[in-house]
Length: 433
Image (cartoon, rainbow, N blue to C red; front, side):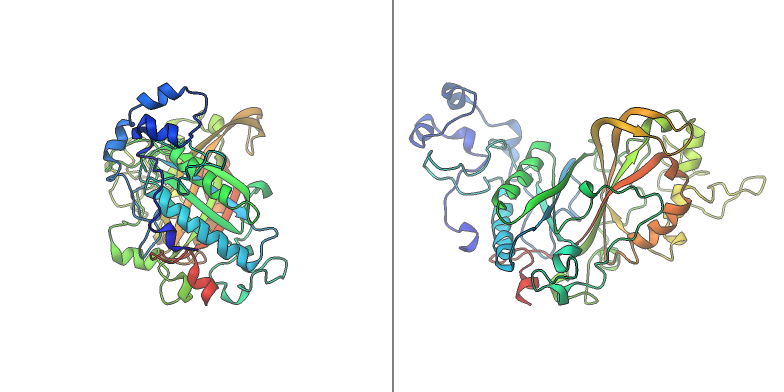
């Protein structure tokens, strides 16, 4: 493969709508349902004027999309490699690297060819759109290293000890069609179409090597940079996250260091969970009960007994009757590092809304019927899932009051390698080791 198509000129998403009519006609461009006259007089989207400022770097020590200031939309996909050989996987990762570098820079997935008889540079639905801070984060699942006792790609000896199969947690109702995967790709962007477009194009270039196993779209509200977003239950979500601007915390809790294999250093472990919320059930509860369940005041975000969102959580505070102000089984108490031997993870969650489906509630009154298939797409990064997510969630799955309102029905764990240097491809150190 040539180095990321260096030196090739290509159609960019940003310059497409500024091309002259003569260039479009000469290129034989076919424009969907719109007329050629409409295309020739179209103007760039306003956001495109600042597209350079909206581009996140692809190359670097760490993959983008982990500590990147969180974008408003995500599109996650897990892929299987059913019939691929080792050389197919390497070729696929090279193709993905090339396409990802182009798309995060606001270009089409492949260079533009002046030949209308050939497939286009990509599907075209993001033409004219700026990068909108697009990032693409790649991961390798346990089954890429070993599946059914088979060393599929000669990688078994390189499987990190920390890349364990997630245990079955209390209350799990995991669906096979929303769980696992050999490879993962998470696209994040401030525009949902840009995020979807990126995964769509990676899936397109993977034909013959990989196939989509499951996907999940997510969103977060457009609060200001200093505001903590709220989840669909109406509570602020992410108040106690480690600060991404604190290098010490990131080295301690997020990045894999010398304790991990060489190919993974500078990377992290990704755990995703699709958590359906029984919103109809939740909405019937009083605000006071909701606050006791979560352990925070709903509107201010402050810990119970405090006034401000970022006040310390006092787990030892009691009311006048000697009862804990934050209940023993409140979500916040069980999630705190102090309740988990200091364990912390870096959370990057999104809400999701996939319409309605027929469901049966897990708790009284055990209502059955059409309910929202909506909730939280939980995304977390950590240095070691055994001392991170697994440590924290084991007791939460058994004791958390919130469990009567949520059901985990999708799951995945992936090792995300370190960043990519120009001239390399994603995971190259794994395959060359």
